[in-house]
Length: 129
Image (cartoon, rainbow, N blue to C red):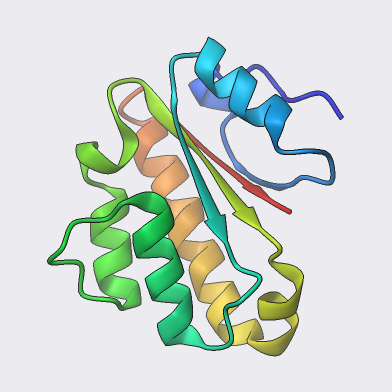
């Protein structure tokens, strides 16, 4: 599977990805975007989700481990870097099926972050594997 042109901030979105992660990493590097991987395989509940996101996205120590704090953090320039970010949410199926409400909320927050950064001409891509 070939990644899209990640430098095109106006095409950024939350999307499914079924291929290997390395081409995304290579494309992010080529586009000079920050690259973050979040492993959701061990995530069993919302608390573990917040911990995985904090670790994978390298959120600040003061991150509040709730959806409001996540939304705020994703609108912080440190989270996205100079030109933007590519976030890969790996092994998401189990959490998505077990916690559909939390998954829906997470997707809404990610979609809002994509739009927030598009307005600022910054790429914010999310790939869900």
